[in-house]
Amino acid sequence: MGDSLNQFLAFLKSLPLSKKLGLAFTVALVIAGFALMFMWANKIDYQVLYDNLSPEDAGAIVSRLRAKNTPYKIEGNGTVILVPREKVYDLRLALATDSLPSGGNIGFEIFDKTDFRASRYVQKLNYKRALQGELARTINRFKEVRSSRVFVVLPKDSLFVEDSRPASASIQLDLRSDLPPAKLGGIVHLVASAVEGLDPEHVTVVDTKGRLLYKGAGENDSTALLSNSQLEYKEKVENEIRNNVQSMLEGIVGPGKAIVRVSAEIDFSKVTSSQEEYDPSTAAVRSKRTIIESAESGTGGGTAAETLLDRRRGVVPSPGNEKRKNTKKDLTTNYEINKTIKTILKPAGSIKHLSVAAVIDGTYRVKKTENGTVTKEYVPRTEEEMKKFLDLVKKAMGYSEDREDQVSVSSMPFSDSASATTEPPAEPGRLHLPDLLRNYGKMVINLFLIGLVFLLVVRPLLKSLKSVSAQSISERRELPSGSEEYAEIPGPGQTSHTERVREISKNDPEKTAQLLKGWISEQ
Image 1 (cartoon, helix red, strand yellow):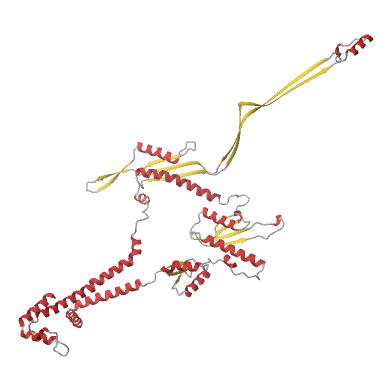
Image 2 (cartoon, helix red, strand yellow):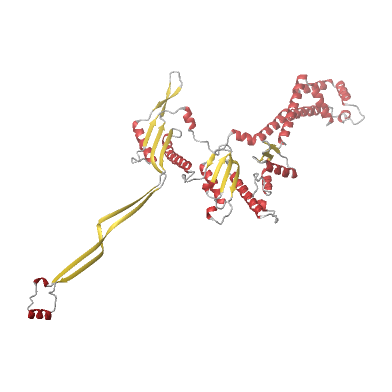
């Protein structure tokens, strides 16, 4: 081994200065690359443990990390804490057992330690603080909300109804992005349902910019979020019709070759109407009543004995005293007429009018110019095709003449920007170059450095050792086999290799010359 090392050092000394400098530079570059690779491989990859922390939560989390001897970094003016990537989820689970982060709000954990000396007033105050904290924590889980604060006013109980006041609440939101009306209404009803005796109309929501996002309904406003809901419903109807029409057209002319826009007029008024209809042709007897009345007048109605006495006395009966009999008959018949009562409730949100505009790209003809360049010539759609497209659009949108809907379908060439914006989205499973570099960058660089070391250091070193070994073998082969003087390797205290070579060169100059020629050819 020592001889091989000496021969390798001698080989390095025999190299010219330019090769020595190049070899030294290559070795230094490889060592530096190895050092950087080692530092990079052992560098801690920090990931966000929690962000948007309050000072109280940040201080509590840092104290827990110090107790566990976990490395960490603080950024964002103390609002962001980073830890090693492999420990993120373990630390989150461990800190969750300690109710961290609490969002800077105190929840119902305030009652974990009960103080029996606390008065009833203090207990009510702690309950109010805990309720506000729990509501704020729940609201903070919305992805649009960075932080929030909730203020609840609970009225005092009163024995008199006229002195009782309803509960109220105010919410302040620090938003990352605009909050949709549906989620805003959800927050309002969430708070109203969590507080006893609180109605949504007594909830007020503002943001940190001072904008009034929600104001409870008053005497003249029964629906505070009605305008936002109407706008959202209008956009939903327009998008649904647009998607139906555009997907149908793109299925015929190709993706990105049709643009559809829809404008809908929605009737949000609620109408309740009642109608009563009578059909006399289908009458039926309901009841029938007959009344007969008879009456008698005059004296003709006296007895026969009285009449005989009057005649004997010489009294002649007058004709007016003759008996009269009157009879009256009353017949009443009640008929039941067929009656229909209709109560029609017209719900809000019906489509009052639709306007649809569709633009379809034409076809293109490939044309070669005299210079040999290839250009595309636009060919518009024929009138027959446009009529078919118009009929298809009407059927897809639900065209109604009673609503006086308007439809426009035209054909014109699309610009490059329009076609670029209407390209279909990329497949979700497709890999992108930035993702590959981020996931496999370290592995590729490590393999590149290993290959570089092999090509620039290991391979030349093996080649040099191989040449040195071949030189030693050739030297041994040139030794005379029958002479014990040259066959054995000299031990300690015997003649050196240099003296032996000199003796061989003196005794056999021809073989020495052949040996030198072989060495020169190998080099």
